[in-house]
Length: 621
Ligand SMILES: [Ca+2]
Ligand SMILES: [Ca+2]
Ligand SMILES: [Ca+2]
Image 1 (cartoon, rainbow, N blue to C red):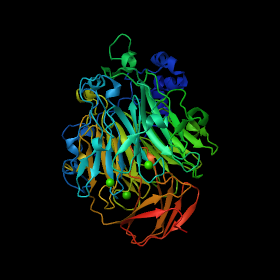
Image 2: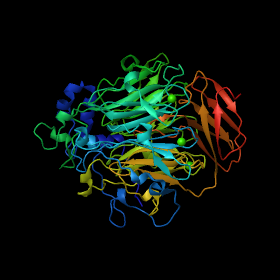
Image 3: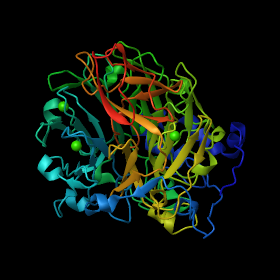
Image 4: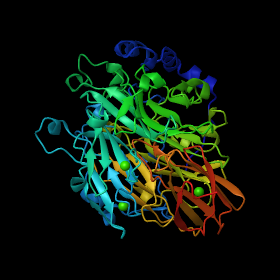
């Protein structure tokens, strides 16, 4: 296995990498976008590489078969957590496509997201998988790739009904998030693209209608590349508002190419090799917050609310959650190669930017990371949400421990998530209790952006295995070994990932959108016989109907756990909105306390465990 080396203190890193630190002090994003490329080119280059990575090359880790650890390190026997059932489920008949295999341009490398939603309200989670596109398709020279909506047939199989449902998108797609924005009891979808975005309203009959124009949330600009999407009722009026992160302002007529005269060469090389250019050196796209007016239209309030991202940081991850337990959803944005944002909701329609003060802007070494996806979860069962962030290869993946009062401390190296995550380039991420022992575990999907990784001995690979970490009593995360032939040994170019209970058996499964390949469905077949409960929340008049923003505090066997209803997060993806709890040996629940988005707190009693229960606001005590 791995030799875990002790973390170097921050001062040592500063001593080792003065060019990067000084570049960051200048801060690419602190400059107006129009000045960024020039200033970046002056300041941000390091001798080793530039482009998307912020870490320095690390020693190569090979397994016993001399494979890079990202595509190896398998064990022959051991507990199997996931079975890859993609083919059996019928998901392999659809393929993701994003540009060409050469990946000459950054827009071909980032992949797309996944959403889990029950679009037909039959009680079974369906799967929406966003597709990319190709330059030929944009030019009308080939049929554009289409998104898939896999209807759950309740028998372990799924059928792609995207065409009939009217949700094929057929644009260069990236992010997706689920929410019932009009409170009619049916989940709707927002899809972000390079170019115009979509707001798919659910018509209740298996079809959707794109309302983006009418709702004024389309962001119709061919160069506008939008990414992470999250829904949250920031002003507490009972209607879900929409946040859309911007990645790059990427003009197809001026896409820099490695080696071209006009390209900032420092941003088109990785370890001395020519690769796709960016995001450093390229113009960032701002972020948008849309207030839901309740009449089918939205108003862009980004500037007024203070979340417009004026410096044009490269946004990817986005999620509304209550980070300081004051009952109001705060906003987290993971930015690629630039500092992250943490905005605290002031309750008056505006946010306070506490990115630096909170500790979320930079990692423990004081450096901005190439943030991809954001996972939030109370992994210690203390009642506060912690934040995990996926980043580039040659960089560890930070876990920000919530100290309370919006103070986040990167403790990755203290809990076993440091050294082991360094060779991986990670995207989708989620906290969930895969073994139902009452402690939320952590998973991520992985894969490189540079196909060149397979040509050189960089210690990383284009296709990588997903990683799963077992939470040991809230103290440590322990790598779950990838048993050969099991889902954790799938070597794939993973991107977006969503988790949820696809088979209604109380075990949380994962769906990974794999770039240029079919999606992977990892069915949770862990052998535990632990108890569980899943809660579908239905909000009342003053909450959103799907209760996005609600928090549940559940007590069983004297242990309190927290679960949240969250739309968006991970990487470009959206999880099952039902709140899942593993209960270990507890065959009964002592109490369930729901903090509804309306502010109301209610207590519920349930008739038993090992089942999915609907809790409706107003029916508790
Ligand atoms: Ca369904
Ligand atoms: Ca709806
Ligand atoms: Ca667990």
